[in-house]
Image (cartoon, rainbow, N blue to C red; front, side, top):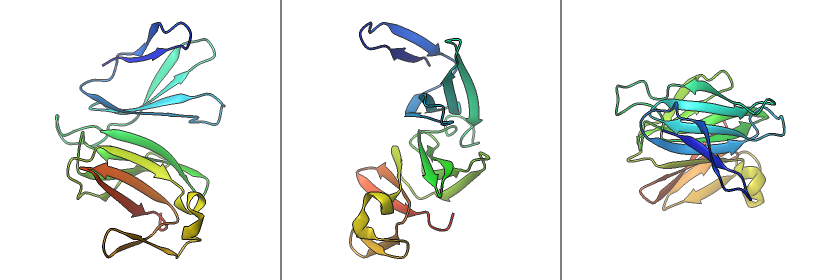
Length: 173
């Protein structure tokens, strides 16, 4: 599956890599290593990969995780997002493709399934909710979601699955 880019002005298709296999579903652009350069994170049947543009103009591809270890087609990752918790980088993923798992990878790429009850998980996003929603206050304050669901949300992961938004507590990581 090709990963390509288009440079503004030229709008000419440039191949970064065609090494990912199966469905290429998730992509996330971020300054991965604080080089003030964007890197590309991808989620596919092949897992989670990091693409970085080197000073010589060549792209490198590094496997961060194989994603869900089950046999194809229930393998790999569906979507990926980068977040920070107390200054430490983590990855949040939906696994496998349109899967049922919310997975967190710490800085050592240690995989932790924190929820496996999704149905057709599709999109994931990370946010420091206390920072962005000052009305929630500091750790320990509550937010109401839906009817009677209550979660402490100093940090969180938002997941879209079938039109349902879910926020998961991160305070204990």
